[in-house]
Length: 576
Image (cartoon, rainbow, N blue to C red):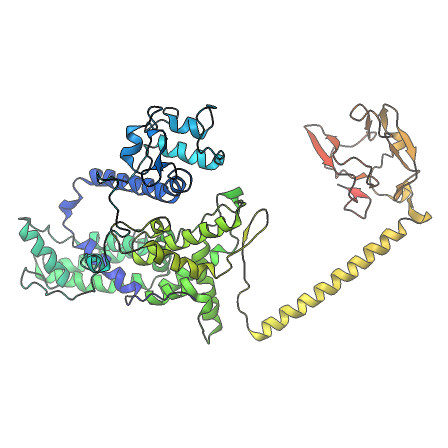
């Protein structure tokens, strides 16, 4: 049902490579860190703009605009919207888009239907959400990667690179074992490659860091935390012992290397290792415990978090993690705990932030699938594939037909249940046979109790129609103020017709002059203290559905609204 992907590395090997690469990097490379951080921020912003254009703006242009504003069909009003140069040039009505401001140009005015003579698209105004998306795109600079080749009439290839051409790109070549450079004064193959490159650039490696610095780096890399006080004391003791070998040279380096290897194993065995690497993978998996829409909470999301922590702490092979997160619910396992983990792992597919209020449910399902495929591409292939929803990739060998071949696999699964507000599906975890029997027994008992409760409520409802339905004031606990003692404003009618009665009956406003009458129930000589206020009323279809009750105390006023068409929740008489 799902395509299996195979990667043969394990998390621990991956970690070791990252640590070694970080520790052996020349210290001088830290110079210019601010510039690097600024470039990183710029790259992240560009990536966000590209993702927004490819997932929102380009599909909208294709669906709503290019039938009239592209050379393949017509260039209505002299305005082309199939390339960046097209909208930059504008049309017969003037400048279409002014990057940085959505209030200028004809584009947004046409979308908003501000001018009766300029309304686009002509067959109906776009949804407000899409108009707001165009406004956001323009306000943020109107990022548009589409370039023209200067010959619009020339047929364009549906694929940027053929498979044969793409195979020449380093990212698509098979993994090879390169020849390790000899010499360069290092025992590690990684160091030899680094030193070879440094020599080619005329640079010298920085001195090896001291033991304390290495330990601090290692602790942050593997646990995300600084060394504990106990570990710091061990470091100090080891440094003192190392000093006995002399400050120069070889003896101390060898001692530090041995202590360093022992510390690596110690930190890899720490529970904090799984927690910090799970946190990094959770960023890739777009982990969240709620979604934007109405603040909806994923009550079971924590199970996926704990699955990741356990996976990294038990050194679960990464190729196994891939299979479990894509198709864990389809995998067989003899061990119950393993079956549960596999089911939990597939939470990876449903962590997306989708608009569950989308009323076009087919559109919603395809949006969810698109988000799933995009995440799979980024997480497991190291590249985006969402662009192929609308067009072939320009440089990667990913045509639209392959995108929809994958989408068809996910379309065969049911991910949501639909109503006005769609909802994700929660599936019970596998349990043992004895536990399942226990749950079934509880379910049957609960059904029996609910049936008995419904029967008793029905009997109680019948009893309320009998003459014994009057509750004497003397039987009530607390301080009681009956309707006969209330201070009334306006004309009220006394009645004993409906419901269970407190004292000699109840009063109603005869369905006249609503909002102009009031009844005040004020207990005499009420001692200071904390009280529960209970109000009795008789329910009926002709009663007020939004009756206002004000409760006054020494410090505040509380307003409560009561639907008197519903039976009071307490004994069918009271509401607190």
